[in-house]
Image (cartoon, rainbow, N blue to C red; front, side):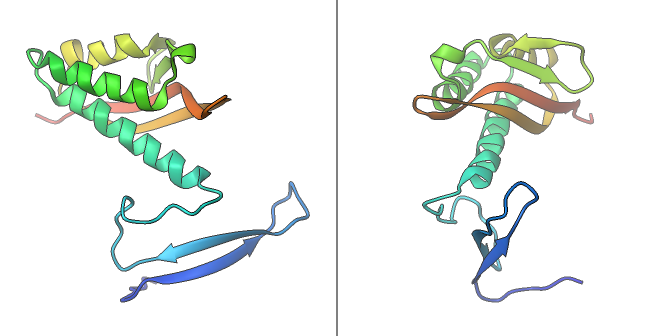
Length: 152
């Protein structure tokens, strides 16, 4: 069954897991249009929202690297540096990148150069990541990429 909401509705839900006897409360906003950047982040418990936004932001920048032609080197470096500055602290560099279907990992710098210069014509389908907590908050320390060749 599909429901359509004309107006934005906010629900407060309670749930309990097998890990705790305490009830957890979450606020869920249902909107007739969905734009992840227009939704305000709640003050607390932003982990899932932040995680999905970070994944999509990294995916978009990796896609921009893959879409750029080999002579557009500035796009490679601008997008790579954006990801590093926002999500990968210097103390964790280089991070490992695992590509679905490939053996082993490669470092982030090599991965960016590979999708820009060698492979190109790629569709970055999904980016998953592993977080690590450091002094300034959660940062990325591993990426898991699902990619495929674009159809010609």
